[in-house]
Image (cartoon, rainbow, N blue to C red; front, side, top):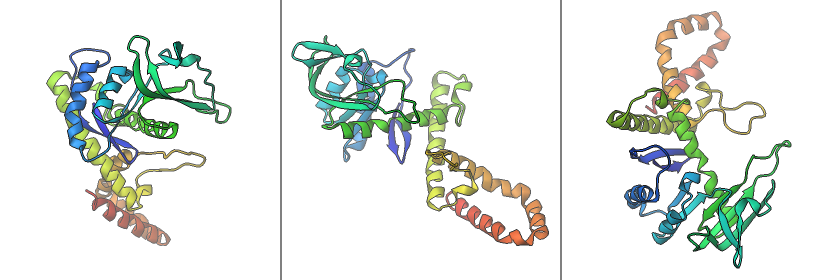
Length: 275
């Protein structure tokens, strides 16, 4: 699946079902990328991939078609650290809180490809706890900062898959296969995209607090995504039809709360305007 990242979320653009288990190969990766790249010929494109896409051949192909890339390497990958001196990435002395950048190095002993950069970073400890492993990123960006900034956006793709599954549509519990699976993924992709864009619009109108508790004390990351706000914003508004009589009765018993009631009604109208 190829997705485009926008506003901290990934939106599916193109996908195909492989006739096998396991990772895709270079031929399959080139095939799907070739289909997608023309859609963005007015933009600078950066391909982000996890360790499934750590092929140096893929990097070479992306470089040939003038596309930026950040592909995560496995820790046991070899690089030519000095002339004829090959070391595994995990043996370069990287520790938590340290990062550095290798420019124009050969990657893998077998291929011996030239002209790649490798960004290496192991994030520092926070509250005494460090990430379990470092990042080794194959890239054609010219600085550590650009490479790390770009690669961090890959985790927005993980959020998309989480919301396709247990975080939203429970895709893995359907047990459908073949064309039925493809059809279901297509429907979920459309629904997910619509709900996420709607959630972003609700946030722009400033009424997301009526739908979800989006912040918590001492929590750095937002509690609920735009997808969640959009999905449950629809349910929240529709619920008014089931409980409107009860709410009116409560307002009569508590006239001091009427201003809050009016604000809620106004929020519903704003949310309805995003449908």
